[in-house]
Length: 118
Image 1 (cartoon, rainbow, N blue to C red):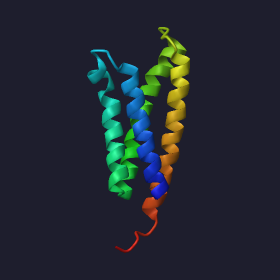
Image 2: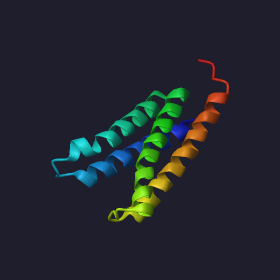
Image 3: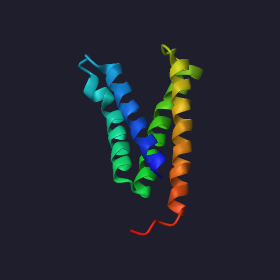
């Protein structure tokens, strides 16, 4: 579980940092980066709290969020109208979804293990 907590925190920091770097210096930073920052903050909280159900929820939210970005991107890529760098963006989102699904499965496996005595 410790590895998953560290991985979740690192991934959340990368997600938030990447989004802040992408929109830094633009007036649209807050409306356009708000969703990623919200998901990243939920992931950071889950990593800090260390609750198994929290990690599962955070990774499930991340997967749902990533899927909601991937589907319209694939629609632009396959059926138009053309969107600049849609292929690269779709590949990155698909990789992020694959990582998220792997982490979600790991978190789900943790919920099936008996809880350590406190």
